[in-house]
Each structure stands twice: as structure tokens, then as C-alpha cells.
Length: 107
Ligand SMILES: Nc1ncnc2c1ncn2[C@@H]1O[C@H](COP(=O)(O)OP(=O)(O)OP(=O)(O)O)[C@@H](O)[C@H]1O
Ligand SMILES: [Mg+2]
Image 1: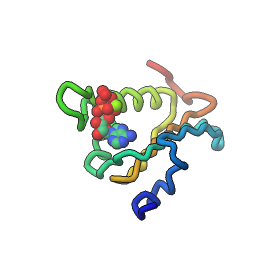
Image 2: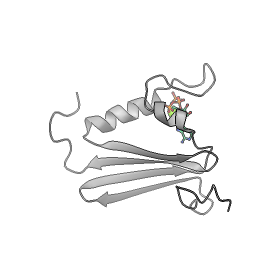
Image 3: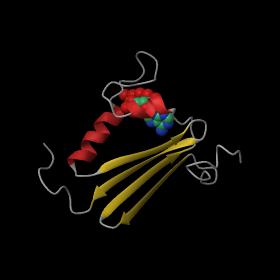
């Protein structure tokens, strides 16, 4: 395993490309989606949830996937954390409160 593969994300899970875990962490259900793909540089991470931000070629990506996911999770009173390392992989952690949002709700 290279040094970068064993970096902030820890070692990749065996040969699986994606790992999904659901754990109740103190009132939150947590879904962690980890991949051993290309990872992202800091410039991409800064814009990740902006609508229409994409690094895909014209006509391939809308740049709406993560924006829509963020808005849905936010409406449920949750949050998404991202850790990524270029060349090693990415982990998205979706936290959702078991009891739902404290106020408001899905618009
Ligand atoms: N798991 C990932 N690994 C590396 N880069 C990612 C990952 N997920 C998202 N990205 C980066 O974030 C950008 C925005 O993602 P998002 O899902 O919002 O749009 P998209 O995938 O480009 O387009 P669409 O979802 O419409 O196909 C991607 O273009 C890519 O650069
Ligand atoms: Mg997408």
C-alpha cells in the first residue's frame, strides 16, 4: 500500500471500491460512502455542493448531484461531511438525526 493510500482515509477496505456503513452515533444515523477513486483537490472540495459545479466534460455532468443531496439532507436536519485525498479516495459521511429536524422540515 502506498503512503497516500494509507493517508487521511485509512487503508481501503480490502479490494472493495465502495463501502457503506450505517451506524447510530449518538442520535444520528450515519451513512459512510467510501471509494478508492481519484479523490479531489482542495479547489474541488471548496465548490463541491455548489449548484452546477462539475469537472465532467460538457454534456456529461449537470453538477447538480451533490447540491441536491446536500439540500435533501439539510431539510432533514442533517449534514454531509467529506474527506478526500487526491489519488487515494473519498469518503462522504451523511448524518441524519433519528428524531428528524428540530424545526421546519421538508419545504
Ligand atoms: N466520489 C468522488 N470522487 C471524486 N470526485 C468527486 C466525487 N464525487 C463528486 N466529485 C467531484 O464533484 C463534482 C460535482 O459532483 P456532482 O455529483 O454534484 O456533479 P457531477 O457528478 O459532476 O454531475 P451529475 O451528478 O449531474 O452527473 C464532480 O464533477 C467531481 O469533480
Ligand atoms: Mg454526481
